[in-house]
Length: 322
Image (cartoon, rainbow, N blue to C red; front, top):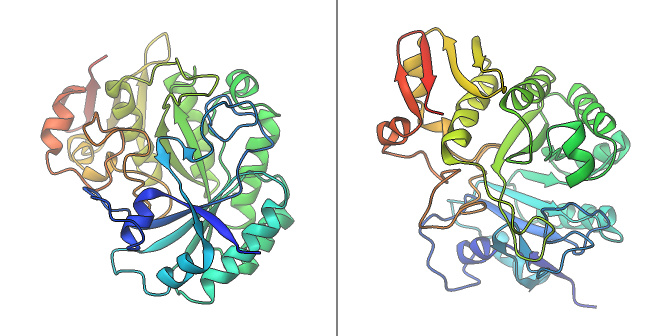
């Protein structure tokens, strides 16, 4: 039987398998293993209760494509491609299928491989690493116990402990995703991100994106001002900078104190897609016309970006617009 796999539309364009205009080409090739998940996340078009198209993950279309055609294209991928990522849907045989595809791409390409998958067994992670994965993402997505139960389902504490234990077991090789705009406070985001980075787990940050057919299709994204504040805080944690966040009584992030705060703020990588190296996910949670939550490349207009969410920046303190 002919083997097929879903490929993000941008990846098909980069590989020359689709004739599409790419204002921001992906620097990672994104493949989706499986469809119609066993889990029921309220924001995902692949969840079991979603009425949306199974061609979607977040805002991106993933056409089903002949695997041999994809494999051949991967073997001669252009230089812009720096990584391959498998986005795994927990459908029947997802682990076996993922192991197969990892081994297949490693047989024709030396590109590093990432896997994003919902797992709860350290031995399963080890299987993926042994097959050739260099990074594994185990998404938390929802940052608090209360909202996790409502929007993602399952045991929040167990999920957090598994991710942190995976970080200790495989130092520097585990990533997770957190979505801003799921009912959490800024302080809660700080605490969970710090916990992960302290355990060598890299946090990839995303803005909630309403997708038609999901339970949360009518929920609004976070404000861009708020998302920018969280991006700066996340990047300081990732860079292991010493800083003190300032929160108001509602646990909103109103500022931060740090040595050379103004200089840290101007780092354009505060505002780009975060996660595995070379993962830029163009337009994953925004349209090409904006607003840009995660820039696919470092923005040139950093001062303009900063002015929209910063009240003032001194050498040692930043105050944010709320």
